[in-house]
Image 1 (cartoon, rainbow, N blue to C red):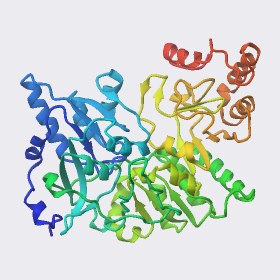
Image 2: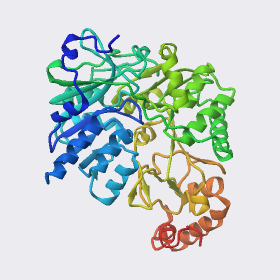
Image 3: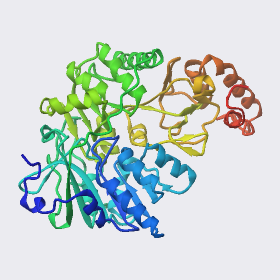
Length: 502
């Protein structure tokens, strides 16, 4: 049976090559996709071919690209390869796109994910000329069943002059009913509270709306998401998870959390996923999650009955777990809610629910400042993603990382971070395989000693302490003592010699 059940939309079915003709040079394109889930699979490649044909004629074909978050080589990669993407926001992880950004040929605006929809609606980044959105099905009444991510899809379709839909039959039809699409927001000064008081609250509708008159093309596909396997758990990951779980249990013991904790947020990646597997092996139960992605570990926690409900905006699953979700989506509908990222990452809701956040980092400094985006100060890695949304507004904000990288040549605990994403005012807990630094109620110099003692690798601990003690003697103030001549010397040494070790 066709996934396109509306005669109005059935009449607009065409090939990707035909649909690509609706994209013009200079267009800003709003595209579905979040952490490699729910992105259009065929049209980006057809647009890339159209761009290449124009370039072969000597014509320029610049475009702007806006998504939910990261996508896949079939989208970010093929478009970045053309050199035509001149603007990109809000988050990416594709190596070809990253190269273009760091080469300076693509201007990248790294946004908090919760801010994106409002900024696009208000026109901060120019008009949305074309929206390209993957859906699971088109219903008889013309409403759309979302696929494996929601992201910014509602705002792109509402704002776009032209809309192109990819109806992907690989996505399970049983996803229908899992989504909660809230259209109740208004522009300032007339905005209204978001009526979520528990992680599993449903406040919207299960389908996406679209003006059929602005839908210019519909493409049928049957392609899997970019489902990337997670790395096997290693001893460092298990140690980090153990420290985090011990911390949560102590918060319960101290009366600062109930026995079933507060809603948990888990960032994207192998370390964050390892923390979820650590929770699976713990005796904690009855948990909830208010986060941005559903990863493998979250699915296992639901299967084990340890998580009652998980709210997010997208899946980020391995191939095995993506197939598991497709096969059992009807069962998971009772436990998973997928929302627009302006709701899943909304600071108001995060603060109200008392979310406990847990995100990864590139480096932290001895005073608790965190860099989660830039390598050696200048080179963009992926972007801030949702970590800023959750960190600043969490009840307790945690960061997890191995203490070293590059086979020990880089210390992830440094005298001063080479780029600031999260300041010491927002970072409360730092965890490495070495231990856990609880920075609450500590002044800067107290923080520094705790971070060095609990989190630094033994190869770097003495050098960090030596830096701090010398800074205390030479700095112009003892509140946050730094030797500005040496504060970034570890990064300089890494760039010049290939190691931070003296």
